Image (cartoon, rainbow, N blue to C red):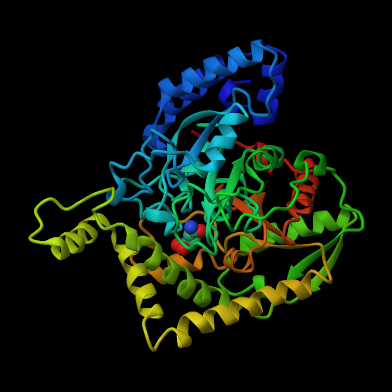
Length: 485
Ligand code: GLN
């Protein structure tokens, strides 16, 4: 087997038995990047020298008897997560020259666990988008069909994982940005419970929704990565001081007696028939394995999209006020006065979608409209959460499609924001309710494009989500297929 094709778990055992070194593994993955990334364009920044140096250190640590969970494993980081000394652009011109003076907690945790950082992956600008086409730099291409999008906003991380340009990756998910690209690229991705993972050093988009998640080539890798980055962090006041279970020991291939909820509102008009068929077939398979299928209703599902597109832009408009050209980032050089400097910095620094969100959000928060929009949306958000509370009295997890369609063509939706927003219609609710959601491969459409099954769990019950996903994975081989590169 080629080294870049290894899963983290496989590589780990070869490293432990000294059959391979971290340096060999890292060099092989860097070669793979050089071979395919001209076509895929998953990476915004590559740090090969640093990666090889970290691999050397990993080999030295292993020689000294250490065996940390990710010792010598090469990973990719979405470029919205701060990395000390390495550019962090958020896919935006406004942060083109920004080099963070500190690393995010998740990056520190990965490094402490021995991971090797390969570079930073492409994203829609400030994670606003579903295709990476809103990146100010370039669009990432789907490894399964280079004329199609990888999904977004963590499209670079998903594509890099699918194309074996890393062994696993971090992304961020505000309304679907880990799960939707995982589905479109045929890899596994989880958005943990809000508060499960520290957001310290994650550049803020919509703070009440943002959460860092993990990508893996299979469920085991996704779980292993989450177990490393999860946990309370005093530097993030919204991180929760709950014990983190050992996710690997949750990987028991058994769903007998478990209750799987299927929400009627998620099989709607507009869904690609092959997506519905594949998801229903996955549900049937789990039923054959002994799970009980429960029909449930999440009646406020139809409000998720409008609620999200009030709350997320409102929070974004406040969070993005800091990009004024004074403290860091792009600064318009020839401004007449300070107001002109603010205006021009933001005019030239931000792209169209970011400006659209700032305008929507500023409007929704303005005096006289706050109660009608922001407050009302918060109230409906509570109703959406209560839908899940009621559902979880009847079932242990919820099963539904991750995305209504497989990967769409580059350019197909750029001029139609509503169509673009609709690609997250199935992921937004779990985000609004703060719940964990995972996407894993459950089939392919007639054009050979991957389809994702979404599993939503109770708050802080990622373990059960992983268990259902793992059980399904044991009897299917979708996750082992490779894109024709
Ligand atoms: N596509 C959604 C948006 O554009 C979600 C993005 C995300 O999760 N970061 O807001």
